[in-house]
Image (cartoon, rainbow, N blue to C red; front, side, top):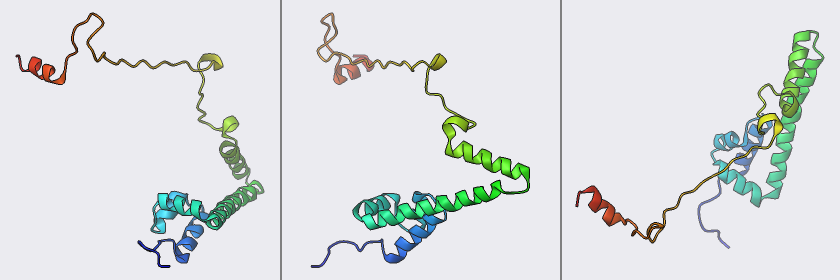
Length: 147
C-alpha cells in the first residue's frame, strides 16, 4: 500500500537532531525549529509514536541530570561564594514556592481568597423595558445621517 501525501519530515536524522538538542537543554520549541519542524508537528509526532515520546522524556531527564551534577559539583567548590550561589540557585528554581525572589501571591488581603465579578450588558432585542422599539442598524444609520 502506498501512502499518499507529503513524506514525513521526521526522518531518523531529524529525530536524532531533536533528541541531541533536548539533551543539550534546549526547550522543545527551539529543538523542533532547529530540526526543521514545527512545535505542533513535534507534539503530533510524539503523540503518535510512543517510542519517540519515551526517547524525548529520557533526553529531557538526562539534560536535567547533567545540569544538576554541575550544581552539585559547585557545592563542593573551595570558594564559599560559588557554593552559596549554587545552593541559592537550586532552592530558588527547584522550590520557588518557598525560596523564589519574586513570588506571585494569588490571594486577597491577609491571605483571603480573591473576589471578582464580571458584569455583561446585553441590550434587549425587542426594545427596552418601557416598550420603546429596538434601534436597528438601518435606523442607527438614518439617525447618524440626520434623517
